[in-house]
Length: 488
Image (cartoon, rainbow, N blue to C red; front, side, top):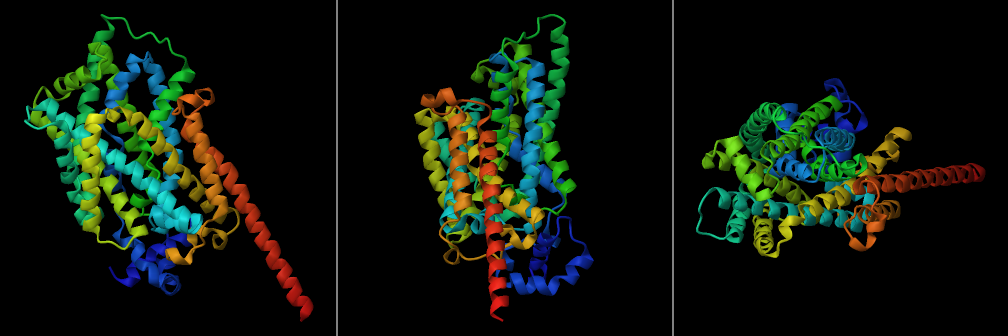
């Protein structure tokens, strides 16, 4: 990649719209001068991926076998089909309202989530947000390996324990990342996403036909749950499961433009977080099976006709693709903290995840996926909310006042902490965790949707604090100018 190519993405930060070729050429010399030392951190415009490729990748990131099983769980909990439909649609809209701007941070700047955090949070703040990402994603990666091992154990008679198989899958799932983002997106585009689309489509339409037939001979589910309870449970899962928070890591490889981001994200969410959970609910209504293990066996027969190899290919494609995206973000995060070779990060992370997956197979903590999803919806996206607030300063004042577009600095050049960001992050996460119902002693504070409470709190604290900070800087500059004028 030439220096001229790599700096072109920087010019996108000077405009909210996708830059034209004329604009790129007009600003080329300035971009080279300002970003020459950091050009390697920015994805060139001509190397960006087509929206179709990004959409297929995102389908693999929000569509998972647990999302169909959660539909079974919602049926078991007494949620009606109208409640499931309305609440998943509402949740998907909320996710879009967050993910589209979050993804635009990547397409406009070309920078990673970790690099964006540097200028906004300071040296130790950036390290904290990076650590949060690594810790949450480690749990998700290990859980995915454990789910894959559990699926193999259920489909075949394997003379290995689930823990040993999970450890083995932790290593197998890391291999695509040795080829960087190309390995991740190509596996999703050419294999995993087509498998998932075919699986979801076939299962959904078969479930619709069977549901309509069953509706004439059996009573439909009568809800005994209020809409408030249904919305809280469904939205917490959908938002926590499908919001990654570090969308910039992936969408910096996409072409700029709101439509090029919004359309792929919308399609992916419709498939993974609306159609698939509804399919699970209808399957539970048809079969009257609400036990997770029995529901898994029934889905194998219902979707794959009992052909174990076919089930393994489709389910394996999903788990491997999700692990690819997970590990890719972790590699980017590690490179923000340390100068280390990619293969060392890949295999070292896989080794740690293998140990965690093996431990999870005995600890019973595999059932805590909802806790992991809830924390994922709070810790990482709250930091992204602060980044989005900082980006809004570019629109409210000017680009030169927004730290999002600051020249990328090395860690030792940054201030230790940026207090507005750290204060908003700490209070926002605290409010989100306290109101999410994760801590039994704070159950009386369980109110609304924890992740939304966290995001709103962080935004309400950070944006006024930053605007006040900019106003104080402006007043100070004006005083200095007045003093200079008086002295002259």
